[in-house]
Each structure stands twice: as C-alpha cells, then as structure tokens.
Length: 272
Ligand SMILES: [Zn+2]
Image (cartoon, rainbow, N blue to C red; front, side, top):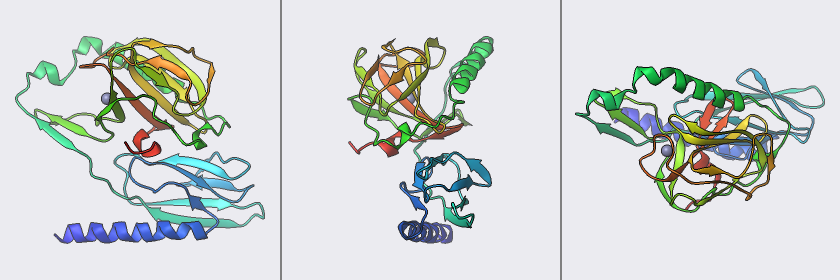
C-alpha cells in the first residue's frame, strides 16, 4: 500500500513539472510516459543534449527522443541557446501499466523456435537494424500521424506473454486486424528504407524513415506498392495487409522506433 501511494505521488509530481514546461523556453509537445516518442522545442539556434548525449535539433529548435517501455526515473535535457547560455531541465518518466498474460502447459517446442532457424532470424534482425540507422535532417516526424489502416485494434504496445513461466519479448506494435489486401497508407511522410517480402517472424516487412532517427515498421504485409529509396507522402498507399511470417491471421503490426528505442505508435494517432 505504501508503495502504491509513493508511486501516485511520483506521478503527480512529474505531471506538475510537465505542466510548468509550457512556461519555460523548453516545451515538450508530448507527455513523457513510458513508450512515448517525445517531440519537443527549444529556442531557434540551440544545441540539445538528452542524457548527456548530443542529439539532432532543427534550426527552428525542434527535436525528438524516445522513452522505452521499461524506462523509469528522471531524465535531463540540456540546451545551449544561441547566446551561449546553458540551460537544464529534468523530468520524471510517467509509468504505465502493461497487460501481462500467463500461459502454462505449452509443449516446449512452441515456446522457443527451432535452433536451426537462428541464423535466418539473426540476419532478418540485422537487416532491419541497418534500415533504421539513418538520422536524416528531415522533419517528417513532426506531422500529426494518421492511422495506416482501418480495422479493429487486436494488439497493443507493451503487452507481454509469460509462456511456461518464461517471460517472452513484449509486443512492441499496435495490431490492426483487417482482411488480406486491405490498404496500408503512410502514417507520416518519409523515405522507404526497407522492403523484404519474407522475413521469418514478420513476413512482408516495410520500413519508412521519418527523419531524426524516427521510423515506422510494418509487419506481415502481403504486398508492397513502394521500393526502398522512394519518398512517400502521408496518406499514400504503401502496402497491403497480410498474414505472412508468423501471424495467426491477417493483420497489420505497426511499430515505431527512435534509433534503437521502441516506442508506442498508438500514442501518436487519434483514439479510436
Ligand atoms: Zn503484433
């Protein structure tokens, strides 16, 4: 009970800090919750560091960073304004509750993949990582994101299954269930950095880079309408929903990254 009260106080404190920020010259445009892609601004011409690491900032002062699912505690943003003055602001990450599902009594083969597939799975992951390495000047990530597909939400970011007592990798995307062939459109503009039709887990996989290290990944696609290297605009048809890879039925799994940090796409689009 004491623990719970402590947590409540912490959340209230960080919310109070957050609401004050619009008065300062640093503005967070996003609440700093676990899984958030936080878009923010400082006065034009400033340099920005997040957790002592210099990060990209536009000439107008826009920048972005991601908060991972399991991050907690305080974070610091430092900026040096055009006049050479150093400013600092800290905030507390706001905790969320994620769904945990326990499934016991499964045959061991279903819990861990066949070791002979390990090399292929590693190669897929390396290709995806490489496609997300870009850190372009483009500000496509500042757009108001739109849903990439119509359909029922059948899975959410952060949920985790514990199979036979073994915690599995949390789910990092938002799933939209819809028939194979349903249109997938670009949730924001960007550059296509990967299209691979047959990854082991994710099947037809497409990645769009939105600039500043922010990217969208779309899994289980049945077809792509674009090619790597191509510029796409928000709302443009990019692919079709499918059930390729390890999917139990046709759905779109939409994931987002800031560099290697996996963030929650659902926090960027209107509720539905
Ligand atoms: Zn999924």
